[in-house]
Length: 479
Image (cartoon, rainbow, N blue to C red; front, side, top):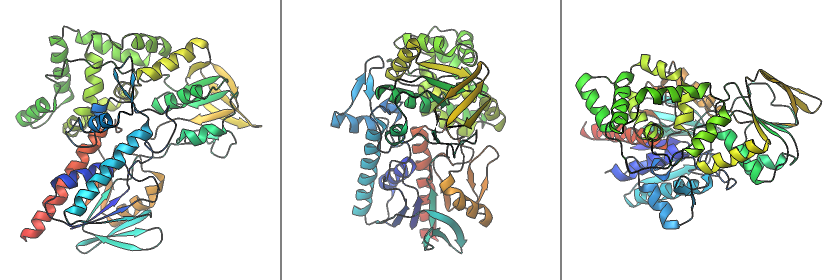
């Protein structure tokens, strides 16, 4: 069994870890990755220490269903400091990248001990085509490589330049790594940051840590800031669990959004909390003044209410599984509330929320909702929003790529799969294999959850892909 893995980020790590744990017969693995930062991908490469992992350790394990795997690795190193409000370790994303690298290298060592041949090719794959019983990969240097199965682990899409500023001096199209891009920002310049999500938080907090003195404005159509993580409590979900979701599926053959709402309603009722009041608070995310909401959520970090805690945690632990079982009509209902859902499920850690609050209180940081257009002229940028026009010297693009978007570096590869009939595009984005020998793990997976940054979700996808590969191996051996 020859397996080709295209890409060497978190999805590939989950794949290798699952393969090392379950493969019983040896084969050959070839990993294609042009970047020198193996196993880290775009999010977890070397960067500033202010660029933090935004989730507690229990939600960052790349080993499927082992929520303590990452925490054990981290605890053995004693390298993290605590977020005092959250009561959880604060970890730079570059350190999490070391965890991914350690997990991948451990998995490869295990596979080699079990007789697997492993090759790492520092080249980008530009095409995959069917050739009889094999798949042939073509790299940018023109070489061909055969495989029985191909797993695409190419990561997320590329940030879009919505305002056509790419050629303008003073425009930062992709802020990561911040250690490189912020060096080009004059310390006293007025800055506009496009976006108000976690990437924008990274930019603002890192600018402040470097002593930036200029005005910083977050530009956003909605003006919605990420919610704030609450300190974990001992109360564990009893209703919103994978087991209860699976039971609903076995009983009815489908799981609806109303079923999931019923589970959450039961969870809150047992805790003595009002479901309707909770929903009203969530929907107010779209209309409430963002700084006031941030202040209130920061004050409630250690509060007793469980509603937001459950959504923040189960969106990652149960959400990817439940999403697979939802009918498309219910998926559409959820997508209508994407900005609210993503702000809840992808919250900021309290230490970053506190830093943002200090900047808001000092007047150095503001939010300008209703962005209309940005024009570059004479070395400056003229920003038009609902509240008027402002002029800045630097614009930093902190808009996250669309879920299931095709990364620019993988466009030729995806075109070849579509032309060959090996895959199709999903109506809501992403790639759907039409050939059972092709597997997609990570953000590019068509029909995947719209909250795609979940490490547990990626680990689950990787485990399913490995199961499919090994099942094919067993079937081939029998025949």
